[in-house]
Image (cartoon, rainbow over all chains, first blue to last red; front, side):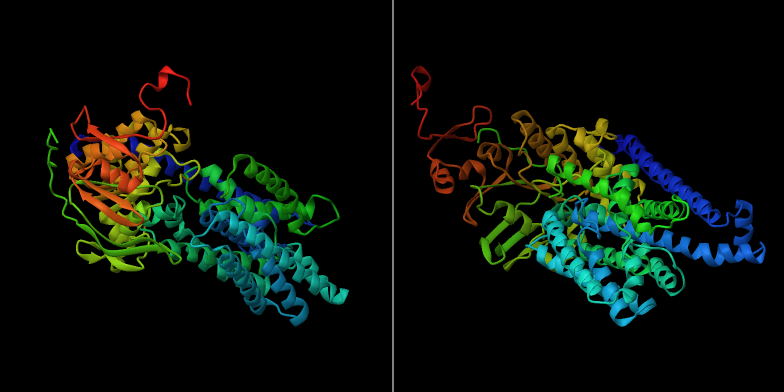
Length: 348
Length: 284
């Protein structure tokens, strides 16, 4: 045991600074990548626009047609893509951290499915849109989350039970979607069908405004929870002994995650697998042993922007919904995760 | 006792911890029943008892991790339920039996987690935090491991890192739930020596649940023997530990001899097989 004067904080402070620097570096690189992807995406389209014209249009100096194409057609879609991706990435990061299980993503544990069910009911049966539709979707997601939380609760929250109960709730919600679709006329469900695969076509307007307001509130709220969630990952008892209000922290994180997922779903439908893959990628990049929520949101944004560009332009003449592309990328990851989970006995 | 234990050189531990008629349980199942306990400040207290006697539950109750069904826990004379989680965490630390290490976390970052209750709302890291972390890592001899991920370390190293995290919390009271489990005997002694040094150098009050009765006798100033959620005996180990007590608490026949190193009582179990001269014939 040494006296305080003899101890130099040097080596430990150095490790900490190195980790901080890495966090900042990853964040900056991801931001640049998102911006580049956005720039490329704005240039592409039925009529390609030169990068210089895109920039001019953004500051309001290009000719009227270019301004219309960039500002009215492409930008709202791009903004929706960025925000949907960021919300889903942060949502997955929060939920996976709080449940301590990489499978605990809103699109696996029934939250996205319940949001979809509520959305389909709202669109097909009540012809809702905008704020009303977002509200109903949020209610559906919250209901599912409460159900999963309550059923998985046994004097503590077990990650495995949470995921398993969630998969059950997801099945029920999917059944509701199928029921509504089969009971309605094909002409009434066309819009709902496109929305259900996760689509950014026709994004903008009311949907974008609601999403933007929700993001401005919820993303900083998620970011603020980072430190207490990092403590919670040490186990309930350790976290409580370190001064974290365990139930309060967990409740707030789940609510935030559900709200983020719900608003993303309301804006673009259930864009699958984005929430599942973003946080693990971000965590691996940052490698700090803490939930990298900012980077998760950035990875989510990057994934959706790139996936949407691929969906629109990869096959000339055909435009797919963005959810098809994220699904093609995400499904193999899910399979890999499941095999790994069994082998390593993780996830409890 | 032949060698009197040295009194702590810093009898500055001003915080007191006590339980009054404490009843603890899970979902109606009572585990600890109307238990009274006063932790001697500045000393090492060891809690011993058979499996499932409520040792760990008592520790969780003392650290405010479990709400009592009846009775109360008093920290400096105040009911811990009336104090905030953070207020408690500033004076009382607890290391659970199996804390979880997040994937990829480095030793320095994990030890830094101990600073949480002392940081403000924005979690700004200060040089005081750096110093506390460095000191804790120095005391537990893990400075050289600072940049290594926890997953690469051996069990003994890992346990030292967890203790460093609890030390970085800088609490006058430190509760540990079986800090020697999963360690080989050399590392067990190393961890217990470390805690004894901590107690001697800083006057930190230590309360630990121990499995090994002889280690408890060796390292504790105050021994608490539990059975079925109640305290059966408590006091200085030399006064408390007898063959009758071991029979009573663990249901085990034993012979209590003098520890050849310290002169304290040492418990040697009798068992039903392998009596004297067992190595001279075939095993039964």
